[in-house]
Amino acid sequence: MGWLSFTACGLIWVSSTSAQEHPTGYTDTPTLPGSRWKVHDDERPRPSVVQSGIDGSAPSDALVLFDGKNLNEWQSGDGKDAKWRLVNGAMEVNGTGSIRTRREFGDVQLHLEWASPKNVESNSQGRGNSGVFFLGRYEVQILDSYDNVSYADGQAAAMYGQHPPAVNVCRKPGEWQTFDILFEAPRFEGDSLQRPARATVIHNGVIVHHAREFLGLTTHRAIAQYQPHPVRGPLQLQDHGNPVRFRNVWIRELGSDR
Ligand code: MG
Image 1 (cartoon, protein in one colour):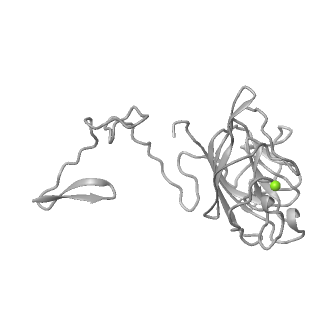
Image 2 (cartoon, rainbow, N blue to C red):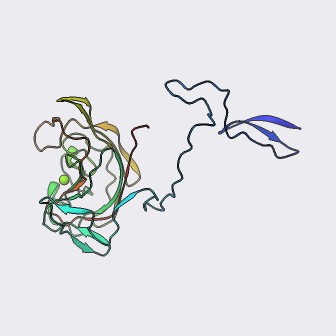
Image 3 (cartoon, rainbow, N blue to C red):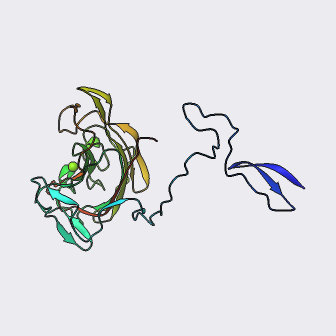
């Protein structure tokens, strides 16, 4: 005999006497609103299989932008090879200017790890300042914000000059920290903005921005504004004169069908 049971997965038939064949999908169910697929549609394509990373390492379908070995994916602002220093599996800002990826991206999931200098030599925006710029234009701030007072919209994980992070989860100087960021590029139609850029930012495992909209291009001491630009651009890491280190940088492009 058997009985019907509700579980987290839905309604299933549970048998106490024999193994039951479970359908792999259905063809007689209603069509989902706004979709071509039916509920539990057996014809609906299954998600492709991806091997997940462990402890922040790259999943199998990610593009690794930096694995500690070389700067092949990066170039300087003048288009020449990036010249940041390689040290102990990390790349370190060394005053040769910001670097950007040779490839261009639009909507992405980005993972990177960074560490501010262990030796504290300055204060406020002079302490472990760097940043990650999506499309080379929209900055999520990197700063040593551990026991370091600076303006809220300029501290670590801020959408610089626009939105402070919800909380400050910055680790001590010299300690490795993680950013996991979902970034969606803005959309323009001609000269008009159709949809602003937005970001979800997770700093050291804690969500600090949730689908938050950029007010415009990152700027300093001014109101950000949008100016039309292509939907793809390079990822840029900022040289702000402080020897910030980076490691384990990988990226996944997001499809437009989410
Ligand atoms: Mg910065």
